[in-house]
Image (cartoon, rainbow, N blue to C red; front, side):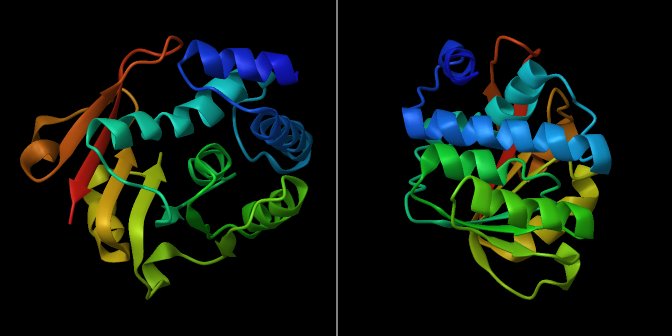
Length: 199
C-alpha cells in the first residue's frame, strides 16, 4: 500500500518521503478499522480515502503557495475536525506546523487521540464545540463544516492571521465580497475551491 499511496500523491504533484507514506498508511488502516464500528466517514474504499480525504486535505498547500503564505512554525486550528481532516494530513505533509484539532463528538475525539499515538505526531485534541473555545491561533482551517455564512465568523474569531475554508466544487458570488479563493485542480474531482481571508 505504501507505493500506492506515494503514487497517488505523486500523480497530483505531492511528493512523500518514506516516513510520510508510512504515516498515511497507518492512518488509512486505522481509519478503515474504526470506521466499521464507529462510522467516522462515509468513504470506505481505501483508494478513495487516500484521494478524497488525504490528498484533498493536502491540496491546501497549493493555496498557501499561490498566495505566498509562509506556513512554517504557524499554529493551525482545524475546526470540526471529524476524523482529522484537513489537520492531520497537513501535519504529516508539512511537518513543521503546530496543530490543534477541535471536535465536539467524543468518539471522533477518541479516534484523534488514538491516531496521534499510532502515527507518532504531536498535536492537541480539544473535545468541545468550537464556539466555546476562547483562544486564538495563527490560522484556522475547516473542511465540510456547514454553511459558509454560518461558519465564517467562528473561523475568524479563532484566527489571528488567516482563515482557509475548503468548499469543494461550490463557489458563490456573495462569498467573494470579503473572501478570496484559490482554485485547486486534482485529477479525481472537478475543480475545487478554497476560500481564504487574511485578517
